Length: 148
Image (cartoon, rainbow, N blue to C red):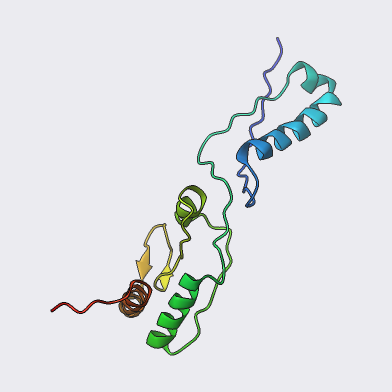
């Protein structure tokens, strides 16, 4: 009686902007196929690949847009300091606007801890300031009308 042997890999792949999910998956499958071709056991017992979970094309928020400039000005007016920027590999809903609606989006918010995890919280003073920044941004970006 032969023993059943198995191995399972769970892999997260991050997709760079301007790359398609299908092309990245195909590239991974080609590398595995090349490795299998040189192994007699794996040739007779080929690995199975299953993709599950969330898949999303890569996206980069546009930089130095007029909207970003307006946000920088509103931030400076409230905080009396320059707006710090952060490049991250995080996934944000802003990609929906950019990828599927051709609408640029900004990601901006209060000082927070443990985002999207247990005991998530935000600094209340920061939240008050951010609310002022967003109000100034909207007023500047959209304009104001005097109601008579």
